[in-house]
Length: 171
View 1 (cartoon, rainbow, N blue to C red):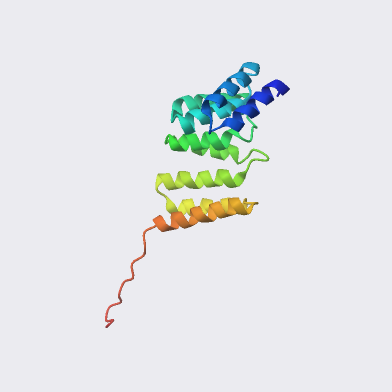
View 2: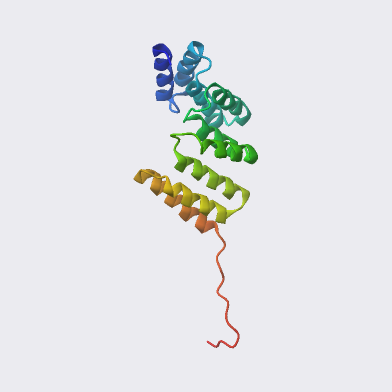
């Protein structure tokens, strides 16, 4: 990462998501200096995914970022979220499996997304199981609180067990 490109990338990052015109201007400068910078491509993917809701275009940027740097720690989490939002569940599952092997990645976020994948597929029990895994990799109180809140939410969606009266029981 050259100093000039870094300057523009950080300027773009600083403006995201509050000032998209300034963010895009700086990001285009950063990409003109290095069109294969995974972080800049990832931020462009985030803009298309999170702001413009153009998942197909976002996926192109995320794929390009992954091709440029397969060990980048930022790209997988945002790419997985994009795939989940676009209901590309099979692709998301493959990327999650790959991401868990990347040294240094925040595994709690990846397990959280694995839980979300199960939840979107309708398996709340598996979602809870994966949230338990996410909990093991939480190393800040903020991430732990987030996982616990998610567990509480998933549990609230589970069907309640009805109390059945035994035969011969009287009031």
